[in-house]
Amino acid sequence: MKYIVMGLGNFGKSLAIRLTELGHEVIGVDNRMAKVEQLKEKITHTVCMDSTDIDAVSALPLKDAHAVIVAIGEDEGASLLTTALLKQLPVKRIIGRIVSDLQRTVLEAMNIDEYIMPEEESAARLAMRLDNLDIVDSFKVSDRYSIVETKVPGKYVGMTLKEANLTNKYRVIVLTTIKSTEALENGKVKINKEATGIAQSDTVLEAGDILVLFGELKNINRLIQKGD
Image (cartoon, rainbow, N blue to C red; front, side, top):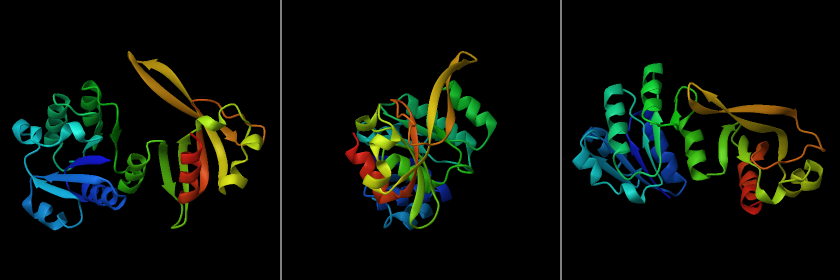
């Protein structure tokens, strides 16, 4: 897949490098030539430009990008201007970075519902979500093991955990399931998530549920790939 990362500070740099390592085509954009030069051997492509210049940004392959991540953190004004500019262009998916409550309010007013707070979500976690669209969230427990939230694969909808037999088939443990509900707040639809408690053998896997899995990432990915 192809991603464009706007802003190559610590967070943007880590995200762009990790996505490149995962095999994706990444275009890293920054207005500081020193940053661009530093990373040109570690990212698929690097470009030095002003991300608030609509003519310059329009020259990027936006239509081909699966997502554009605005990772600018040092300059909130530039971050918001870049996001507003992208809203006017043919971009499939915009992910904004938030460093303040005010910035979140402005992004929500622009109908940017997908955003990240680097203090809460690491670049590695976001890279994993972008690498596999079925992964909702993840947390690395150690070099070997991770906890991953993923949608219930279609193959197992309607089964109990005993019937699905995921532990024996894929060497993963289902910790719990999460149900999502929609609610109107201030005229906007908000999604609330609630865990159902410790998973039991008679827990039924329903469409729309999220599985919280513990295991090696390669086994979790195998479950996701073979379960559709």
